[in-house]
Length: 517
Ligand SMILES: [Zn+2]
Image 1 (tube, rainbow, N blue to C red):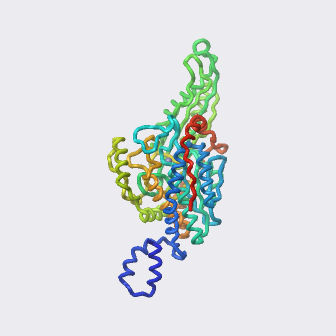
Image 2: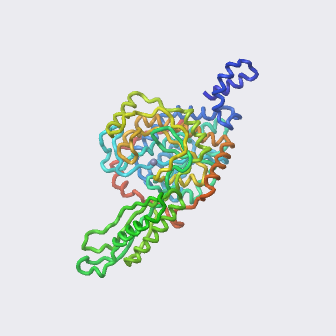
Image 3: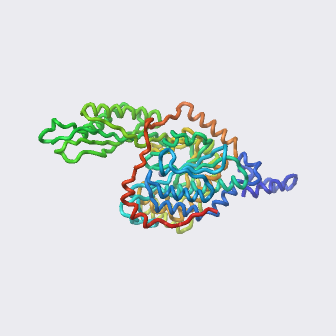
């Protein structure tokens, strides 16, 4: 539509068909700044590439779905994405920041550098037969994609490819990066990527996630979080015979829990603090020599979360002192709140409106309604309207992708793949991520993402506005790492789960060869 408008505009130069000109005005207004001097419309080239490769994008998402690898175990997924991107001409590095399953792909050279960031990890116990509304795991007890991250991997690959096509064809200078970080579900990788300088030369980024609508937003979207496991070690003894010889590590766990409860009154009302006892002894007549408690501490911004967390560490030290045990802390997840850039959000919104919603079939809507009915939700079917641009309402969840947004001006793209009423992290969210609903939503997501990256690549004005907004947003609060300086990524995370289930899961792997064209 836009390239046709551009062509007609030049053809009309000096012409006097006033009516025609007037009718074209509305079309011309939607042209983004900075693309006027290009010999063609980059978005049109990208959209054509996405439509041409819709089956390939779907196939990437489907292949990832059946790998169903939880955080830090995305070995097959990373290998597959690497091969797919390399065969499309990208330069792909695995293993960044000490994480074997980290994917960092790029194409092009020099400035500006625009990154797409997303994730493709599955969740423990999420295995489900796609398309089946009754509970029917593919492999009983195995992990599965119950948040649609498989589609996010596909959309990232599809959008990056489409951007490359437009850059090649129209000789757009710069670099497009696709960053797929491991273990988002455990909030594990981005602080390490940022710490190791991966985003140092990136001028702007777009992060993307599945949703039940086509939307963007700006401002603070969620909470900061610091996680850690505290392990206490004491001395075992017989609980009945010689308890005075024991040093009870589970007593330390309990005292830490009580200590934090005493602290609660003195924290800001915005805080969140929750824990699970991961090692609690064997039986009552054995004084336990090991005890472990795992905490998530959150607050509305990074510095407050850190303040709360430092108090928690003092409590742990106090608990060790009281019980004569030793205490070791293992950092386990960290995240800054996601900060959406308003200037980028405005550009993304225009693309969302330009691309529009998928055209759902009656069958797709019927299926969505059946699923909603089975969950006791309103049977509203699939969304038909894009969401209006608005400031985010800060919720108290967390996502480690937030760290990126404090070092690079970042926009967000949410695309319509989730059936409204279906909750992520529940097996019912594993029913649709390989169905046509997901495939169509992925096309919309890839188009909005590619168009927004192209806006950032081609418009110095947009990059400047985004930078100015970023400087304003981060004036009061400067980024620092919430990780202890010596923290290392836990690369064995979820390994036991995959060792146990992978042989059975392998039987379901798809042998699809994906080749973008
Ligand atoms: Zn997610």
